[in-house]
Length: 205
Image (cartoon, rainbow, N blue to C red):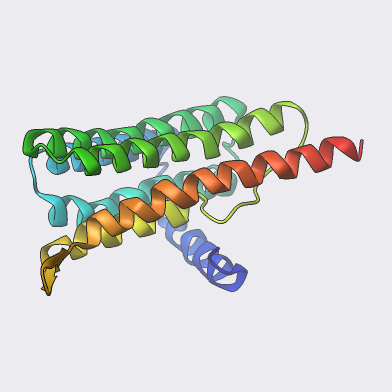
């Protein structure tokens, strides 16, 4: 969904950022673990009701995850286990964020938002699973409207803007429920999109 030029620009920026880390001998796996712990801390903040603060801190926390891959390639320390660790902790990091939201909404008795959060988490999990299962079959599967980057951007926007909720007539418009509704819909559609893509690729073999 996010354009290729933007991704290439971001990749160039990340490559520049990893050079000082590589010079200091920082381990890619250490960045991976630090990123997971930072995201788990953000999830705890969400659970305590600090939505805007938790959402804002997701941005620097995500930087750890964005840097570990380029650092591994730059230092020649890329490994199969490192890639596995990164993917596994990425899933747990997203779960930590949604778990925090589920706890927060449960405390407030907001059943609809609990449902939207659950559907968002389910969609996110299935997007990742579809790619992993496809690659296990030897089919590269990076297609889709809502990859992890898009999902994090939408969630952060909803969290950070949530304090700006406003009334429109008799309705209260809240950014976070809107963000969760978008995630619930499009993350699951992305999983379906990947299923259809893999079906077509499998037929071509």
